[in-house]
Length: 85
Length: 493
Image 1 (spheres, rainbow over the protein chains, first blue to last red):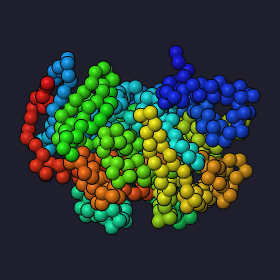
Image 2: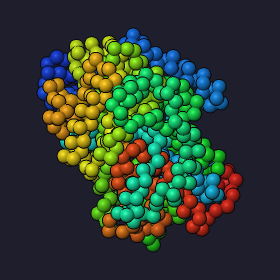
Image 3: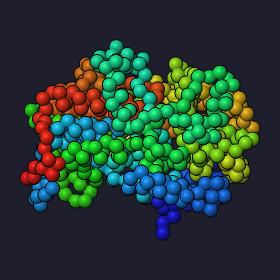
Image 4: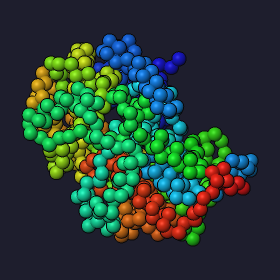
């Protein structure tokens, strides 16, 4: 099964994927993260994506009161009740 | 429908490229008016059963380039764009503003376009009816809107609840990641079914190669299908609606629209940012309509504040903190509030093609940077007035709004407009006031690229109303009409 990082990389423009793989590999290591932190825009973009993946984890999200599965289930029931797909 | 193995050729009265805000509306209106319509969409058709309410998954599914479209310039700006049937209307917040009267007046005066509030009114009404546009109720707006409302009331700032295209909304909080209830009335579930019911042929996974022109008139298009093979559509009317980022390249590839030198230029964005506040009480921003409330006190200065909210992952992505401090603040997620600032820009960028892909150049000018400095200070003022314990501005640590340089700003942008702008004079615009490409009969543009100036508000209604107006023009211009049974709409060769 693909990790969320793999999914994000796979959906990025093709020419950007090798660079993203390298940057994710770097930013997940302390020394690499320190290098990237010196490049403000890059640091911001990668930090945002890392945070996105981390807090989208169901365990992490539920601890903060967000249950995506429950939202989807409720939506599906309402959609079907309204005659939608 | 039957296909010839040798050559896949369709014949229609109109071929529409792109199924977003403009293309879906145009296709449905033309088909219902009796025209034989082929609608080509590059992306897929989204199944609402696949909507997971998980931002990291839905970015990859619903957004072009996984939501990672970036501008080149200072600062680099994320520009999220939808793809597939419905286009960006599938992933926008559903906010509906009519084009402000002063903008229509500007178009009439400075661009020679024959529009005003009165002539556009029936088109807006028609679109609003189709999309079930109504004002969000305070109950549905949720706790995040209540925080902003409290601040605005204490400061005496003009404000209100937004009008949205939603029906049966229960405040799932994930408008921009695919509405799980299908409450948001995006064009993929409104106009596309209407187009199909009226006999339009809607093809997904169809990539336009070029527009065919004979004797300076549209003759059709050539496309390739992701499922394999090429497609040839013969049509005397071709309407491009691939969005302000996609349309210029498609015109250029076909050798059209370039005479004025304006093609791909005049790119207006709606640069935006957001602040987060830690409150003493529970806000629970994941419940309710994320973009339900606005503050327009400063709209004449080119700035508007609108709600932004979402699940923890969404907030975590934009929270301008790092490391342990980021984790500490995120642990208080139920007490966090967030509100956005959008700037009506005077900066202009461009879209160019590189190896067949659009590359977006845009740098924020001094005037717009000044608006962000002022706007961020006001966002902090808003949250303080609402009783915030702490306010987190989207700036580098230690930088105050007054001292912020352009490179310090953490921006996103929405609503790209103007890259094939309308202007009555062929030397100043790519298309004329009727949205037809100057010098080429039968080729039209029906998306945000036609919009000649920044409009200062969310533009989906503007794009849809202009597309409705274009359909009206085409149907009244003696273009072939007449009821044709859906199954017989397309001739095979």
